[in-house]
Image (cartoon, rainbow over all chains, first blue to last red; front, side, top):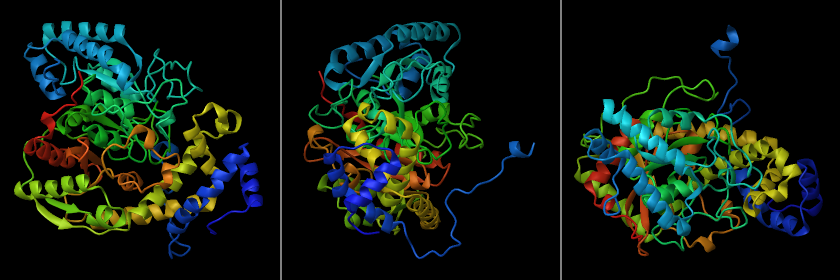
Length: 65
Length: 463
């Protein structure tokens, strides 16, 4: 994930999220984007496609009743 | 009461011996609220009439047949994201200024059933997020050790209220450190129990899979007494654990001799350096535990920033999902800080979220392996003493990694207790972590530390 974001990409993400922001807020988000990018890099590990999520879908006793 | 504010345990003993009146105790707490809360802002809503009525009922019952337990007649506060039937529950937000729930949250119900006296609803960061905010209906809580300083959050009012002796205990919630942060900066004790041990039903969500409800009080022993009333299965909470509830006070007083305590030095020495005051508190705590007969071992896990990234991404996404409708339709009704947090949701993709939840599984396995053969782990709780309330950065998500988030990511129980005072005279703290559902162990260790050190003898010098 690149450490910066273009105006066009940010506009796309904001439109998708349904948030209506001011230009000043958009500029702030662009400034902190590197922080998000760094986090998304950190959670990516060489784990392969089989690695499961922390939470797995399961049936409970009530589902079976 | 102004001379010596009792702990819950002390009050319980005195009440049981009929040497302390719940009515007088409640009146004393209310007097302190009226004298001090203009400066502290610990409460957003007082329930004075209800408190006095509950105290009178408690007193009559105790005089007739003795207390039903150690919380009977004890004044408490509930964080204002906890639903309370017929009592405003605003979540610190303009959006819910007129919200009066028609049912109690499970934790409120359990504490009421234990005989507690509700003094009122305590200040919270808006929806347990962001803060301190100065653009909300009520001003943020202030630190009783120095009112120019921050309490941390989001259980800010509960932390301030307990430290100042306005209540003897209270409920906090913790998504990334919101019990342990205020406990640390306000110089009290606060435990984030194992995920699922205390029901979240009726408590406003911050991030579903990271949210924990837990007690805050002056001592670890008091937290144990409160946890006893709070723990247990609740079908209203889909994440509630269905396990037997042990006696959380049974092991208190048995010391730490022979226990194995791991220390994650690299968190606070390499990954992010804490202040000298915090470092001294940790080093002294290690020496204390060693002197009490514990075996100290070194623990190595992934860098603090990895745990923070995992927890933050999950938190950002789950919060954005929970509050999506209001974010789209009423964004400007949130505080600026929460608006910023909600905006971050737009920047994180679904794939990022799933990668974070996969990372969470790895980190949980890592901590499990690291804690094999250990009873508890000791780490820093906060970076330093409480900062000035005006100095908290707007984008604090990125300012520094959290020492508390790793145990929201794993769901392991973690308690913060006071480990002394820093250069500015404000409290510093340590964090102790146990294996899942090993609250009796972590409370035992915390209690031993408090009883071996003098820090529970000093209250904020409020007049």
